[in-house]
Amino acid sequence: MWFWPELPKPSDFDAFVRDGRKKIANIVRSGRDPTSADFDPEWRAVSERYKPLFVTHQQTRCGYCDRALTDYGALDHLRPKASIAMLDPSNPGREVAGGVNRMGRFSRSTLREAKPGYWWLAFRWSNYVLACTQCNSGWKDAFVARTADTLERFEGACPSRCCDEGWLVLHPFASERTGEHFLFNEDGSVKGYSPAGRATIDVVALDRDSLRRARKDVVKDALRVARRFERLIESWTKDEHWALDEAQEALIDLLDKGKVDRPLASVVRAVTEAHLQTTWIELEALAKDLAQMPSV
Ligand SMILES: [Zn+2]
Image 1 (tube, protein in one colour):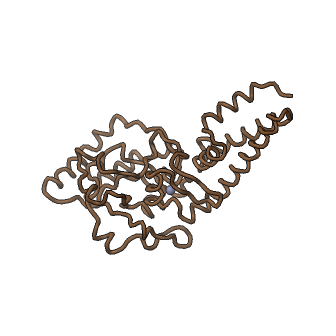
Image 2 (cartoon, rainbow, N blue to C red; image 1 turned 90 degrees about the vertical axis):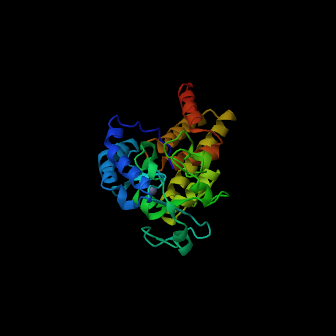
């Protein structure tokens, strides 16, 4: 997961969604829970009008898995609009060959426990993110993470208290670092460092086989260059002056692999930071310092 800066709300957004908000509020006032169909055609119009902004902002990458979109993707509601269902950690589902489907996520108890969603966030700008079809509808769907607090806590959520429900899935538009929440292994698998990281992995299925395969070479490549950089710096500190130029080249190579416009840059940065026990910002600063050192 890559963390993007917030995408500013367009000045015409509130006016554009006024009718949709009013319609949903009226349904709730009448005593009925809005269903998925109730949000259209207004939601479809929102998606058509504003999705291109998210595509540009997120550089055509999925907000969850950080891969380049291979199809049109979708504007996802981070907090599901029509219904929510608790993810059963003992039954997270498995990927079917080809990585286009899931098995076992839904069970009778899941469906029985499904509750109305965050209808009041359906037309809220801050609740949107561009996601690939697999992350969005293939896995995340209407699921939320099961925590020590159970569904009752979510039932307590309401328009005026929506921040109290213990929501865990990370928002891709936040000032966070991937490495604070996720640990990527050489086989491409991912583990959560933080409760939010673990919940995001579970709900969006970020440890699924197809993502492991996509990340494996990226992780190995980043580690290969990071280790080389480490060895060269060690040589340089032992007065082997020749190593400085090569260390500089390795660092430039590493920084290039984790550039902001690279799919899976989040993985490169997290792996590098964990291995070198530093931050990306510090590495960028180091590259500038090394560039100013006289070569031998
Ligand atoms: Zn994705």
